[in-house]
Length: 306
Figure 1 (cartoon, rainbow, N blue to C red):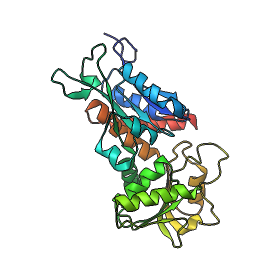
Figure 2: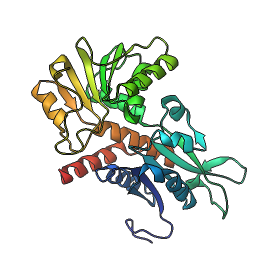
Figure 3: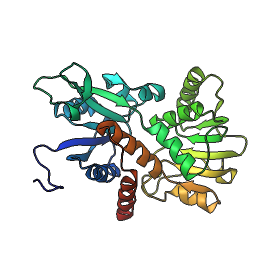
Figure 4: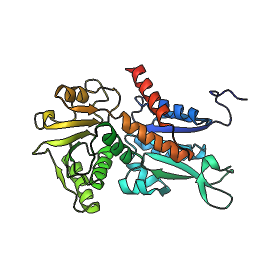
């Protein structure tokens, strides 16, 4: 019998594509989850410039990868590269999880993990979004804040910020203030929310009142020496009680430290990473993800690299 941690000819692969991706804790989390489920799968990480996404997805399909995760900057452009979109990807307008599928003997599309594919057989890319619901779950569990009725300032209008803004609107937040370095991007997100969620209240720019929550959906904080994600003179941290920073490495970003100094309850993005990853593993495997095992692996990894 092949030893549990040995890679063999039957080993199947998943991966995360990002640029940059060296900071990613996803391999530690997913490999622990796959071992716990007894799957002969391995999870890899690839630094992939945006222009290489299309051939990289085709290559993974050709090599019969189980699936891939997508992180910055690929989530938006991936929507146009999918053969099929799940309702989650259509709703939130971004893809962070891809499952490769082939037709079984009856002609039905099934995950490649369940189908003995033949030479020349078409493999399709099925796109999902597990980020938006993971963010909502992490905020509600870790900060004790229901999104319905909340006043939220959201920093960032890229792929992560856009999905977060749409999720907040869907949850019926009282108001979402969209703060972004490029004002036109914030305005575009606002216009999309107005079209898709009539009645949802959004404002571009800084709040003129205290808020219940500030979310950082920018990548500022990943690198030492990064500035804080917004102009603290225009909106100081004392005007909120809670801060959610999507950055999870380092575990205590500059924003987290600053928020705690001001007496805010502040948490990093580890919970969002965990829940979106657990859902992705369930999409690929059809089995319940071992969330406790995956959380422990994440925490151990972050401690080891701090």
